[in-house]
Length: 255
Image 1 (cartoon, helix red, strand yellow):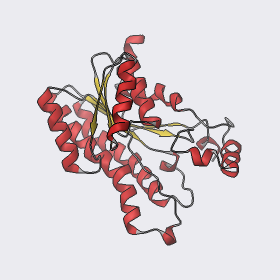
Image 2 (cartoon, rainbow, N blue to C red; image 1 turned 180 degrees about the vertical axis):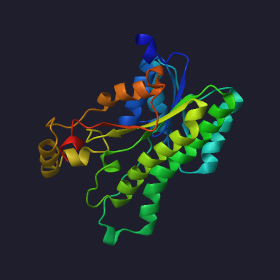
Image 3 (cartoon, rainbow, N blue to C red; image 1 turned 90 degrees about the horizontal axis):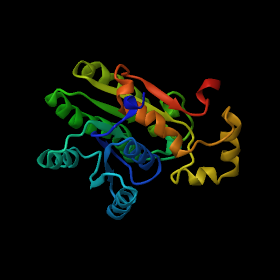
Image 4 (cartoon, rainbow, N blue to C red; image 1 turned 90 degrees about the vertical axis):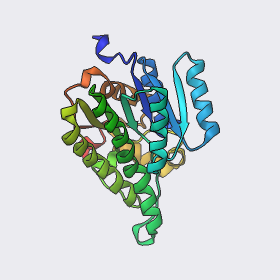
């Protein structure tokens, strides 16, 4: 049974992985045996994250590049090609948030959120899939959605639109690439206690609302998403494609 989830000999690229959920995914895949490639836009933070994994005995490297910039992404994959590195697993985790009522929302802010949360998954996923198809050995692409892939909340319109798009982009990827042995799925995290969400956790009113609206009565922990990420990266999910798995403590079940 353990061989189904063993990622030994596989190489995984995780975008936006210097901290928070992205780092948890990277750590989890490394624990399952994968060589992991981390990504971020802050060089020192990326170096520190890679060092932490290497110090723990894992195989890790890192690249600074802008996931929403096609040239930057292609340059990174070209470097990997030159090094003979084959990316077999991609987790499109990079994302940003912008909270503002739509009546006050600038087009530039709308576009920036869509570019980082949605368009980047297309750019990175396409670059990886082109190589997977050419090799003929398949692969795994995992996009990161959200509760807002299903349910809207006020003041996060661009994020909601982007994550709804991630759900359908995942299905489109599955529809086109499944015949090449590429499984494309998504994870929809619920309210997770991360550094990015610290202001919300520290807001008594929001904290009470999260706990009251969730059947689990608590915030999730980053490590609680690792199992789903490993499953979707492994042979255990070889006939699963076009799905989004919500890891939310039951939040969506009560809507």
